[in-house]
Image (tube, rainbow, N blue to C red):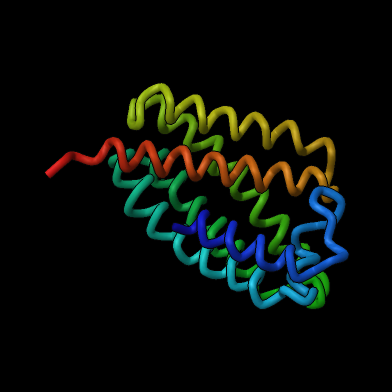
Length: 177
């Protein structure tokens, strides 16, 4: 639900901002444009929905253990940074950069820790591990590009694909009945 809501709100914001160019503008540019209400709402609601996804979905599938606790705690922190991006928009000054970088870097570390946890626990099978590892490696590959609009957009797309795939795997792994 978080991903679907974000995508819908992002598309609304993008359609309301005629000057926005996908991959050439920062996503956060939409947070201070004509469609700011949609974009910022998308970030806030998606971030809030990402918390139960992390705790009730990812954490519960991984079971106990320190690595799973660290990974899901990092996901919750990333979710709170995502909410903060919607609250502290570009016109908030340096705080926006801090919460934006906080989101991407925390999410990257979370993906690395979760890839390890998924490998060790075998939760979500080899597919869950490979998808998470691929998102982590892709994120590492984005680091040398710095915080450009294109690298930001690609990183967000990778996170959206990861979240969708893990969400589907979580649904498929639920016991029936």
